[in-house]
Length: 85
Image (cartoon, rainbow, N blue to C red; front, side, top):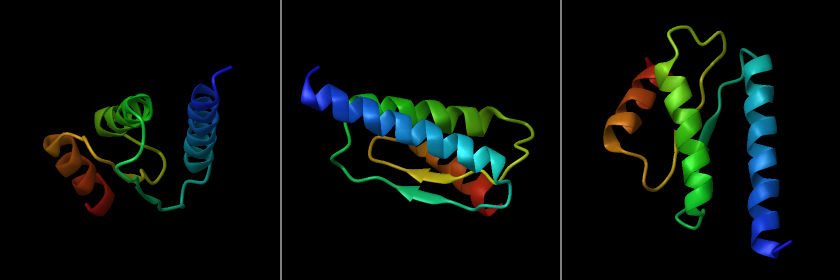
């Protein structure tokens, strides 16, 4: 396996594990800010999570604040309102 693919896959598994942890620990408030150096694949995965958070009518957990380069401004604002609202 290509080392960069392995790192992306491992990082994705960590993100999925974290997201699962966050949903189970309903009082945990998380602020995640990612650097400019994350891959496009990872940005896509983060955006999927952001879309799920924004689209949910009832979260049942404290939604995280997620910030990363390339996140559309309208999604950033909606996530900000959910997190701080």
